[in-house]
Length: 316
Image (cartoon, rainbow, N blue to C red; front, side, top):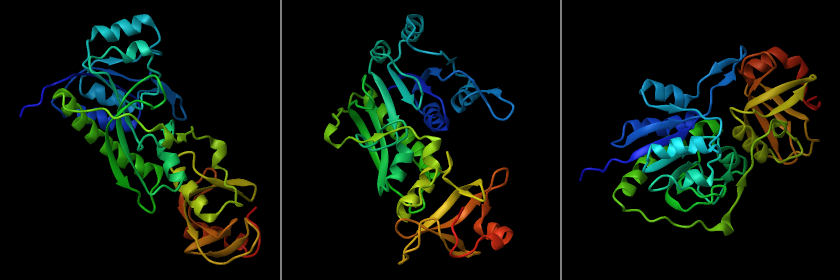
């Protein structure tokens, strides 16, 4: 049966949103406008840089709007004049006022990378890994004025890999979310989908990640520190101090076994890993980076610094 084409406004900014925009471009639906954040200065030269969504929209010759805010009545009128059936939001990074939420005929649809109501908020991917969750997924929801509180249209679940990082999970959920979005829109076009209210009793919040959180507290259990390392890869990257400089830890593994050494003590140092005592167990460093240097294997790090990596001494 042919799918009725919906007139869609897409609002998104980073790479996660670009996955969804590409799926929409490839779908039978009609993209009448793309909203994305204004260009930002980025890189060492602070060059004005377009978002991944804008770059994709330009390549697809789609109409682009980059308002600094949607609170302005003029911007709201311009959006309303487009007469969208649906406004699709994916990591737009801008608040949608109630006046905008009620413009589309079928409402505003959001792609959220968690199984709502778990991990509402700004950093669901990182918090999922940081908490040691075994499964996650994506939620397609109708937006309301709350923080990720709207009714659920569709959910797709996936298991977490043992070595999952925020980068790998981001890509996995971006792909899954894009597919679920198209399936949801097809059902909406056929008037064949029933929103389900969220169970607020199961709510958790994914607070924004800060750079300060990335400093490793060696008094914490090794397993929790492994989760932290994976959650903060690729940003802000977990780190410790070593020889009065920041040592970024890109990959690490919790190691089981009885040890009663003081946290931060070097328990083992060789080409296959450097084990550091924690509040419970040890954390084996596998991939590290010194300031101004490249990300290197622990084998290369050990070769360069073996004289300073003395078992029984404290990582300082």
